[in-house]
Length: 87
Image 1 (tube, rainbow, N blue to C red):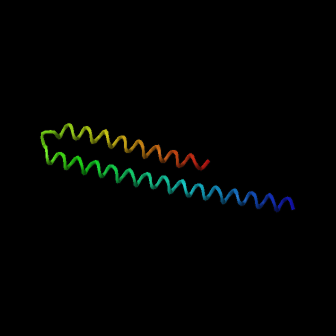
Image 2: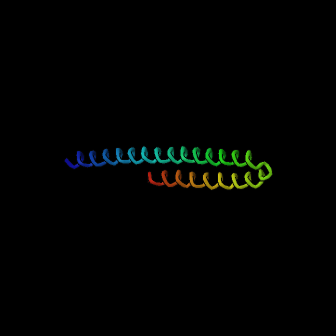
Image 3: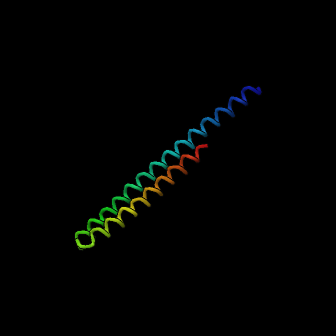
């Protein structure tokens, strides 16, 4: 009887780890999609700004690169947090 109970507990823990791992993968995927959308919006805004004021292209480009780096950092942080949740 004890062996059967241990088997059911172990089996449930295994399924729990699979569910948590799946949710972590979904979270990491959403972080990557969000980063892609965010960088796309930053790039779109930069191109529109450069088209309206070509003389400010260097300032706009440097600000765009900094904003894209911040977006990537947040996306990487979200992926790390999602994968840390699996342990």
